[in-house]
Image 1 (cartoon, rainbow, N blue to C red):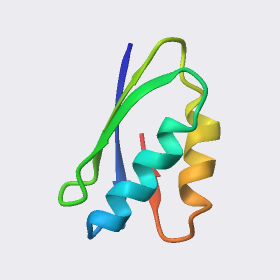
Image 2: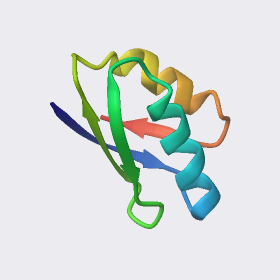
Image 3: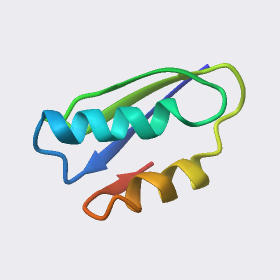
Length: 68
């Protein structure tokens, strides 16, 4: 399965790495690619993704806003 969403507030490679790390730590996620220039995040997962929990984790980093 694949889920694509946008994260506002990304501006550098560190943002990309932080978001990818949080996604990859989520149960069922097999891969994640974030583009800090566009804010687009592509998540491949083997079971339904709990977007509410993932959004909370990303936004808890303090400077991002997830737009689904």
